[in-house]
Length: 147
Image 1 (cartoon, rainbow, N blue to C red):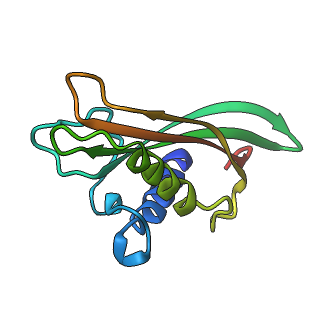
Image 2 (image 1 turned 180 degrees about the vertical axis):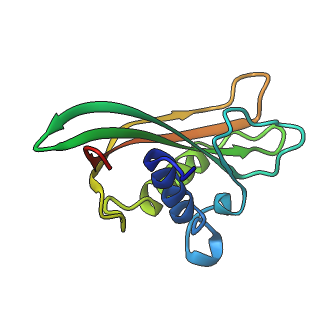
């Protein structure tokens, strides 16, 4: 069975995110550790910085013999701070890396639009040294009826 279109779009996001390395003039090396479809990060065993890319597809409407759908893609970056360190600049740098790596055009002929729809930066709580920065995108795409 072929990959769903939402999953194919998520894989393109992962390809863009893989460019997030200091060697490519980004602030972090989060692109070296990408988890596609993974909801949880293990603070003890996962390598940091890292990225998790999640997706969901939803039906939107049928227009002109085409079914329009929307894929919701969330790219979340995680950085584990050294003990006793709190760095707001590091959270912003991770967010900027994600924002700059993800393109708003995609080389897939069935994708109509991509646009950012939400963002979030979370500082670590008292029990955690992990900063999280997320960017959520909506990608509309189409499929011809009967195909």
